[in-house]
Image (cartoon, rainbow, N blue to C red; front, side, top):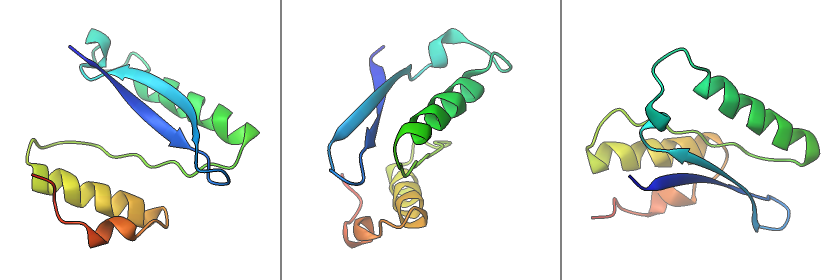
Length: 90
């Protein structure tokens, strides 16, 4: 299974600043093994050294239109409304 990477973009420069590899199957860990806690800790550490906007999207459906709407909503909550101008990719 391919690894999935979360990319954090520096607001001031617009360049990639960090990657947090995370397997899409959560590495085989069941509930209660601290995956969310680890991600929250990592993001908190990143925000201590630079100003970041963190955008998190939970995927509960394999419906692309629902996912795209979740992406647009998440970016809009963070102040980035430009994705509202784009239709759902096919």
